[in-house]
Image 1: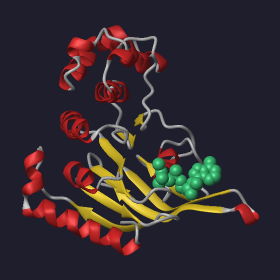
Image 2: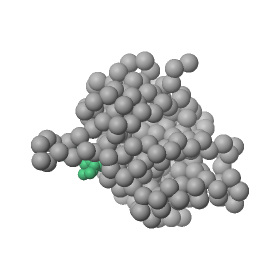
Image 3: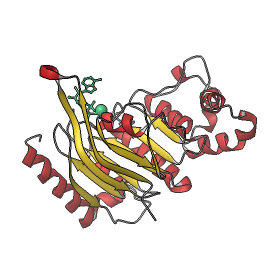
Length: 255
Ligand SMILES: Nc1ncnc2c1ncn2[C@@H]1O[C@H](COP(=O)(O)OP(=O)(O)O)[C@@H](O)[C@H]1O
Ligand SMILES: [Mg+2]
């Protein structure tokens, strides 16, 4: 089976002449269906740039990205996207915000009612389905945004630091929810984070990216069994992966 996503020698530069910025690459990476792949790299190495290119929202400068056998040349529809700042609108309830994703895709929310409730239940938001975003904590808002990004059952989820603005404790608890959402539907997830522990806990593979222009330094398989709760952090394999990645970043001089 060919990989679901093939990033082939992809490079991105911005501007030209003296103001040219070498933002990313060249990078080649194959991602198999159903994987949870973290992109872990220093700030400014081009992670968000890659996410936008994967979504078809930004052109590659050279190389190509193949998804499901086809070169990405336009905005992709079979993806769920989430960024650090969520896309909940303030004038709709939680349920209304999730429905918005369906409406924008021309899908009938009435047909998805059970799925919406199921998703909200999975992230413990059922009691808040009829509340507005300002009535929720930051963690609850991001949980709602996960449901919004997943409700149409996308094949691929692009998550660009979705937990970045949350406090450490909320982050811990929301990871479990994210993992359970992934395990139930098994979309292929590409997840950007700055946290080494978060990447090792959640991922089946971690791609360690160099400082700008980002290149993949190491692709590390994390073979610990899922689900992984907090306890996994005490396992020797977890600890050794974290140390291994810390050493790489120490080598770059970024920690
Ligand atoms: N639209 C743009 N125009 C010019 N430079 C950009 C643009 N977008 C990103 N960059 C530059 O590309 C590099 C990578 O940015 P980004 O992908 O946001 O990094 P990351 O998400 O890893 O922090 C940075 O140096 C950034 O300043
Ligand atoms: Mg970024």
